[in-house]
Structure formats: C-alpha cells, structure tokens
Image (cartoon, rainbow, N blue to C red; front, side, top):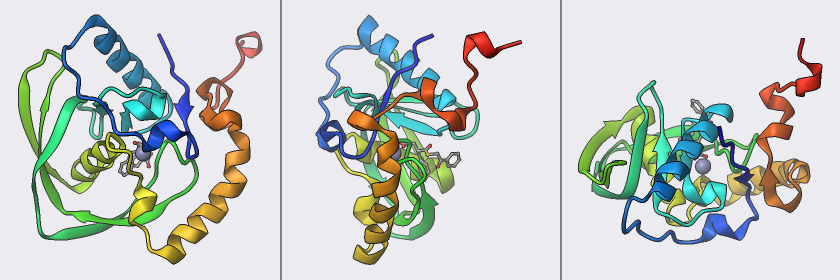
Length: 186
Ligand code: K1U
Ligand code: ZN
C-alpha cells in the first residue's frame, strides 16, 4: 500500500502542463495503483498526477464504483449545453464553488494496457472527467469562478492553507480522515 502526499494550492506543480505518457511502464502502473489508493483514502472521486507531484498525463476516477484510468486523455466532443454544479478539489480542501461546464463530454484516452477507449458522460462522471483533464493542463476549478466568488474562496483558503506547510497534505496526518495511530488501536 502506497499512500502519496497530495499537493495543495500554491504548489507550482498544480499549474504545470503534464507530459504525454510514451510507454506504459511498471513505473506508470505503480503510480496508477498508488493514485487509486490515495484517492480512496482521501474520499475523492478523482485524482490527477500533478496532485501527487507528478507530471505524467494520467488521472484516476471512480464516481460509481467503476474505477477508470485515463492516460493521455483528450476531450473530443463537448456539449454546447452547459450545467452548473458545486465542485471541490482534493488539492484545495474545504473550499467549494459552483462551476459551469459542458453538460456532456466525450473523452478519448488510453487504458492501463495502452488500449485506446472512449467514454461519453454527463452528470458527475462528465464533470469529474473535465475536472481531472483540467488538472492535467494546470487548470483548477477556481479558474472558472467569477471574480467575487473566487475572492471569497481565496479568503477561505488563506486560513485553510496554514494546515498544509510546504503545500503538502499528508493524508496520514489528516484528522478529517479519522486515522488512529497504530499505538492507539485496540
Ligand atoms: O481532482 C480532485 O481534486 C478530486 C475531486 C474531483 C471532483 C469533485 C467534484 C466535482 C468534480 C470533480 C474530488 O473528488 S473532491 C471530493 C468531492 O468533492 C466529492 C466526493 C464525492 C462525491 C462528490 C464530490
Ligand atoms: Zn481537483
């Protein structure tokens, strides 16, 4: 089991463009496995490589007990109809905001075996795909918010960020995840 630290807002890696994966090596497979473990522990529905300090174009998603790995994903179709819904981000804990996005997208990506596949989704999966693909291009949900709403979200973050020295969220130390120290277990 390998739980990765999550980088939070302020870490420059979250603003970097990722690099396409050329070959699905054992290192990429191990990264994907650790990303799933980290995402589940953090109670997220998605996680992108920059959130764990990596620059590979890889994200993992599990919205409805259906794990999906997207490698080198591309949005190939977007609905002109939009939908507005609240989003959160494991890299900006406890900050939420409404985001307007295309209601439905079609994504083409490689799976963990390097096979190309397409997924078309709306609702939460469609939103999560867009949120994760944004991470792979250095974009965050805050970037879609109005100036006023972003200002208020940033005010909240100014207080929250003190919990994350060095812009690192160590899940093992996160009281919200209800961990017990092994010595404290019965
Ligand atoms: O990439 C991330 O930061 C993960 C993020 C994904 C996401 C959340 C909401 C809308 C779109 C994408 C999260 O998982 S944050 C946790 C969260 O907000 C959530 C958890 C379960 C169901 C719904 C939202
Ligand atoms: Zn996020």
